[in-house]
Structure formats: C-alpha cells, structure tokens
Image (cartoon, rainbow, N blue to C red; front, top):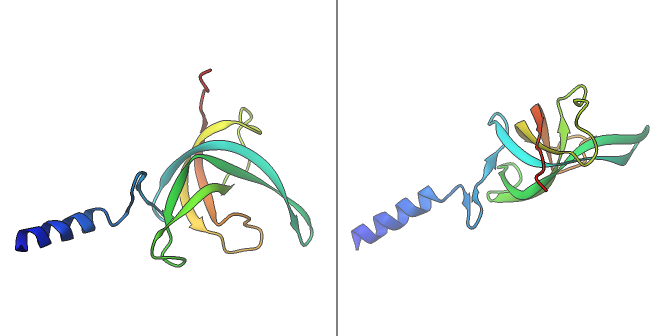
Length: 129
C-alpha cells in the first residue's frame, strides 16, 4: 500500500506542470519561450485614436501558467507582440514565423490580448505546399 501511495504522489508531482494531451505549460517572465504562428496586424480603438498592433495567431493552443490569474494553466491562442522596434522586411501580414522571447500578463489598456510576448528574435518559416 505504501508503494502505491508513493508512486501516485511521484506521478502527481511529475505531471503537475502538464496539460494532458498537450504537454508542459509555458511560464511567464523571466522564462524564455518559443512560439510558432501567423502574424496579423489588427486595429483596436484607443483613447487617442486607433492602435495598430502585431498579433501572433498561434499554430497550436499554448497553455501558460500565470499564478496571479489562476492556479491552473490558461489556454492562449493569440498574443500581442512587443519588443521589436521594427519588423524585418521579409515579415508582413500572414507571415508564418517562429518567435523567441518571454510572455507576461497584459497590464495596460494598450495591451489587447491576455498575454503579451516580448520578442527577442523572429524568423520566417518556409511553408511547404
């Protein structure tokens, strides 16, 4: 009986940061992550006009552990991208990319998705047709 209890506790500890059928949860800053998706530029109303922001629509739902919002991992399908002063010339609307950086929770009215991705690098992905 003691062995069964120990195995159960070990399994629970090992899987505590996982989402069944998906894998591990992503963590917010300062942990660095990599995401894949399609770039879109969307307009959002703002107090002084319109915000045109870069959004990354993820290829696959990501799960983010944000202890300030929930004790469970939260699903994320798109993130607002910040950190790049200027997008590379070869990346525009509907570009398929891989981005590296870190996630943080949106905290200001100019952050339009639940999580914001602070981009360190961005690389285009060649789509195979």
